[in-house]
Structure formats: structure tokens, C-alpha cells
Length: 306
Image (tube, rainbow, N blue to C red; front, side, top):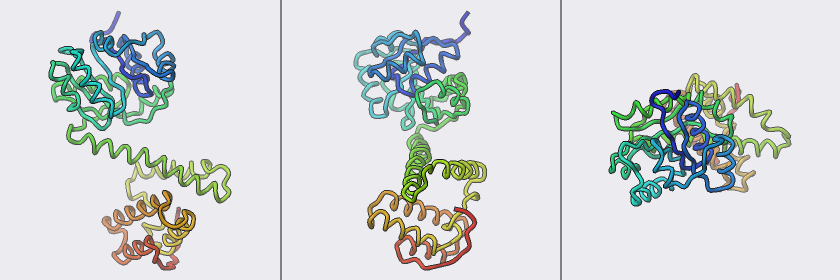
């Protein structure tokens, strides 16, 4: 016998996110009535994570579902919603949720116009599109946005997937998403750049060298915030910073290399934040700035970490 409040859910987009969330909702005893899948990869993913769920056309899914989950790229979301509205597909009382981090419920205004209920459910997690992602949901937070009266519905759906809902105001969605992208996406770039440099100096397994360091750094930063910061910038070690910058200029062939640009930008940001916290004196800040511009000195401060 089905639990009270179980919904017939349609998934539009069997990408890594849509298929995983569909499987999680199915695990909470909702009925997934259909999934749209265009590419071979999405069809295989749907078969693996949503076995027995029929692959249907988008219009058919919207017609049959009590909750439509739109798991499509950000740029495709608006045109998809508008297009279905022009076809008269949305239904009064229907729940319509999207998984975009950038948007709140404003982009679903055509849904609201016909009396359907818009929800924004964004998992703050990176997905592989495989079953292991279901366990990641148990330690995952969702940024949820909805009208005040409907927020409990959005929160309940997230809780049923095993995750934690955090309410994000409509006006804050883009900044919220920028924060996540800055932390997650740019972390991958930083790791790739560090790994490249280590390989070039003969380290055969840079992941083994970086792994313990980066895991400890991340754990310390999450636990202690910026008080966990170590390294030459926060120590005001001008000579080391100047040597780093010069070495990277030589490596990148002057200016314009992505590793040099990233190092300079992050070092400057680190110095400014350390200065605001009183960890660097004005003359130290000036010395770091000069070092990053290529005119640093040869300070010989002792080191205590990378």
C-alpha cells in the first residue's frame, strides 16, 4: 500500500542530476511515471538508475505527472518552460521543480500563470550519474526556493531524498550559485594546475602528494575558516612570494599563462583578506603587492607550511 502523499513524478532530462534525483524520489516510494532521454548516454543512465521507467516524450510526461522535475541545463530551462506553456501543457495544481542553481522560481512564471506550483531544488553536490551518487545525497545540502506557503513542500521533497534543505531567497540565487561554482569548479582547476607543475618537476603521482595536503587543508578551512590559513602570503614572506611569481612567469613564458594568472589573483585575494583581518601590516601588504608585480625583495622569513 502506497504511503499518503506519494506523487506521480516525471523527469525531464536524464542527465547525471535528473536520473539520480529521480532514483532518490523513487526510493522514497514516489512513482516515477516517465523520463525523457534523448542521447544514448542518457538512455543508458535512465535504464541503470530508473529500471522499468518508460522513456516518454516531454509533452506526455507533463500531461501525466503530478510533479515535473526539470533537470536541464540553465540556458535550456527558460525556453523549455515557455515552449510548454505555449502548448498549453502545464496544469493547475501541478508541482513543477527545476534543479538549476542559478535560478529561483521566477523563471517558472509561465507555470505560475496557469496555477501550477513552482519550486527550485538545487543539490549542492557534483554528480557522476551513477548509483554511488545516491549515498552522496545523504551528506548533501539543497538550496531551495519557493513561495512561503509552498516552501514546506520543497523542503519535504529534499528530506525524502535524504538530504538537507536550506532556503535561499529568490534575489540571492545567482550569488548562491556563484559561491558554489567558485568553490567547486575552481578547486578542480587549482588541483589540475598544481598537478601539472608537480608532474613537470618529476613527481610521478602528484595525486599522492597533493591528496593528504589538500584534504587536511579543506577540513581545516571548513572547521576553522580563515584562521586555518598558512603559507608565505599570510606570513608576509615577500621573498618567497616573489620567487614563486618569477618562477611561474618563466614557466608560462612571461605573462598570460593560466597558472601564473591564477596564482597572482589568488595571492592578491589572500593578502587583502589577511590584511583586513589584521594578519599583515600595511608594509607587508605593500611588499606582497610589489612581489606579485615582479619587484619583490629577498625576505628570509622562516616557513611553517606550504
